[in-house]
Image (cartoon, rainbow, N blue to C red; front, top):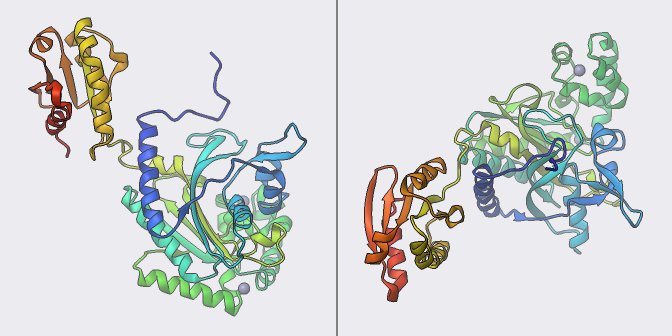
Length: 430
Ligand SMILES: [Zn+2]
Ligand SMILES: [Zn+2]
């Protein structure tokens, strides 16, 4: 059989059902904070990412999936979500004064070395607020993420926050930092030694121990930011304090990309190790629109979180809330007579307010013992059993597989809904 592409994987039940459940929770919470779902194409023009993420970043030079399509356009599979949202803002809204609050959930693509929990097609969810520089949108964003992660059962995380200034105040800091790093060049790891001239802020991000020892003595950006940035940052922190959000100021937290300004933050899990310990990161990108060719900057703030990582640290990984009922036909004749009843029962459950899934395994006829062992393997809570005896009396057996209790249910042909309700009534939902 043809194998899947290296670094890509199928997500199947029950995990896929848990993903769907999480997506539903995300949708409900994010919508309440007035973020609307946005679905942007997975394919974009290459230029969108080379101009936003940056021409000489690893993502663009080494990791992005790019190709020329049949009409000669240079395209890319999106490596991240933010640039697409900014593009979509300009593609869809006439009024440049509109605030777009959008959330997304979908696959991203990077040709990296596959590792545990890291795939070449990986999933991210994100929230983006475009068209506002309000510090209260920054704090609200952190608040809603805190609420979301806690609600789904991730408790052991820390929020790290910093301000990285703007294009007016950062150059001064960059100069100081470069001077400091040049003086310590010999103590840095190989990658960081190269980063000094090209992307000095990224050195602060290095998790290598040797670099960490240097970084703790590096100048702190906080002492260099302008009044405007400083007042914005104070308002974010004040608001977070008032909202009772615990956070840790990390003076060396930066984002890899140049368009980030002012607030940057990360949700860091204590259960994820080493370099990949962030559940996700975010920040202001007030300067992104101008790097995409707009004359004026449209202020914006956003966050992107990894979905595979989120699953790695989830305590209860099975969020599939469907009650599973196994259907066991014991002979051909009973199956012929009952199978449409079961199909209609599925439809009844689909429109009830309870989540029930009937596992049919292709409506195979087997003996009771084989059926029940299958039901057990498929983690079903109940079984509907029907054989000759039941057919004769026009009834079926509803068996609670945990309590080993069973109940006979009479089928009322003239009022099927009544029979369906009876079956539903026999199921215990905790
Ligand atoms: Zn500034
Ligand atoms: Zn380093």
